[in-house]
Length: 255
Image 1 (spheres, rainbow, N blue to C red):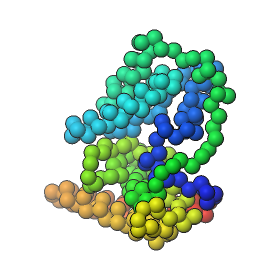
Image 2: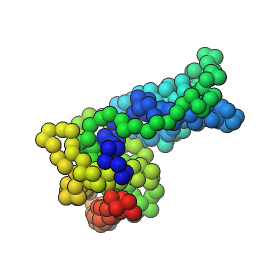
Image 3: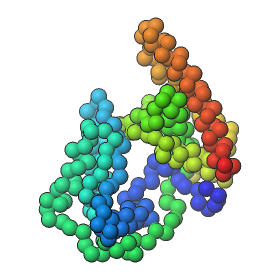
Image 4: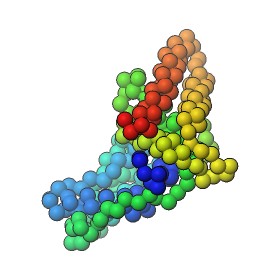
């Protein structure tokens, strides 16, 4: 956070499978488990089911690719945010073990997987910051409504097929940290025309995303009950923007 040379690219484009130090964290975890006789469990598949079969298909392909990689690293299972994707997530582990594959002795030695933290390659964009802002607003609104985790599509309304993901405090903190890091170091975008991250930019993005969320929510109102629910939600979302801004400010102060 404090090092100006360590500003990360858009976090949504950082893939564990292709980021060496992140991949080695996973491999080192497996090695420690194998060394100690513990059970190595992979990461969570956070995609949630959607009424659109095409969205579920795309989510399933992404989950399958992740779990094939995890199985090849020596994990024996993973976990899912929703039972809908459980079979898809489990199958790569079953298939590899059924084929007789076993971890090598090299995979059981943690020293073979040093963790040298390096900033991944990738772009720094306003859109990446915007996605963090939207995720943060949605998460805080859920928290204000008594939910510690929430189904969030940070690309809602954008072209393409993208499933909602289960987001919680961990990803909320990641969004806050990335935004704050960019403000703290006045990170310039790698896109044209270039923009510099500051509080004014982030405040505008938070407000724009809140208005878009509320407009989409208002369009679903059909009766008095819906209007009452919308009025309550509007209060939460507007409060969420203020809380999000304060949260980000605290992080920029390393507080």
